[in-house]
Length: 374
Image (cartoon, rainbow, N blue to C red):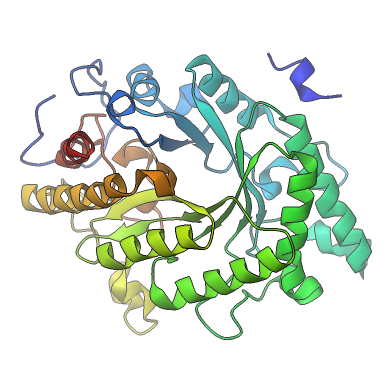
C-alpha cells in the first residue's frame, strides 16, 4: 500500500553551558535565519521528536530552517535491518509530518551509504551462500523504488549515494558494493533513482570534497556519471570542519569548479568542531587524543569568538555564490544534539549555532550578519 494514503537576541559572551537539559527560554528574540536568507537553510533532526527536543527547540527548528534532513531514520540499516521484516518508517514519517506542518521541505537521507556498516549484511547473502550480482541489483532496485515512490511528491530531494570515493588510488572506497559491482554501483543507483522519481533532486554526498585531492576524485566520478547518463543534480559537501583549519579558499574554488561541470552544490552536514581531531587520526597519538575533553565545563569566550569568525567567513563565501548553491544544512540543532559529542570519541563539544540551553551563540549572530550583508 502507498504510504501517502495513510500518512496524513543579544550575542552570548562568557562561557557556554557544557551540559544539561535546562528549560529553554521561548525563542523569538533572535532574527529568523529562514526569513533573512535567500539561500535555503536546513537542519538535521533525530527522532522521536518529543523525547529529543524541548518545545522551545522545536520552535527554533520551525523558526530558522527551510529543510529537514533525518539523521538516521531513513538509512537502510535502520528501516529494514532484516530481509524478512517489513520496512520500519515510523520515525521518518514523524519527522516528515513535522516538516510538512512547518511548511518545510524534506530531504531523504540516504539511499545507499557506501560504508560496510551502514547497510544490512543480508543484502549480500543468499541463505548460507553469497548473493549473486543479479540478486543484489534486484534488492537495490526494490529498496530505491520502495523508498522514493512511497514518498513521491513529499520528499523533494534524495542523497542517492554517500561516500563512493576515497583520496587514495584506486579512488573508489572498497566496500561490498565495489567488490561486487566495481564502479558500476554508482551509476546504477542514480539510474534507478531517476527512474523511481523523475521529479526528485538527486544528490551525490561526500566528505572532504573541498580538499584538492578528493575534489579531483569527485570530478572523475562526475565525468564518468555524465558519460553514462547518470549525472546527479547536486554534489553535497558534508562540511564537518575543525576550528582553525576550515578550508575557506579550497571551498570557494570547489563551489565554482563543481558548478562549471554542471551541478549545484550543497553543504550538507555543517558544523565546526572546537576540539582538534588531528591526534585521533594518528594511531600512535590516539590514546592521548581520546583523553581530551577540554570544554566539559564550558566553552571559553575566545573559542566561541573564533568559531563565530569562521562561521561568518563561511557564510560570506556562500553569499557570494547563491546561484551556484542548492542549500546549507547544519548537522544538528544545538550543541546538546551534536554528533560531535560522540564522534570520533566521546567529549563535550560546542560545534553548532545554539548552545545547550538552545540560546544563540556568537556563531549564530555571525551567520545572521553575513547573510544580511550578502
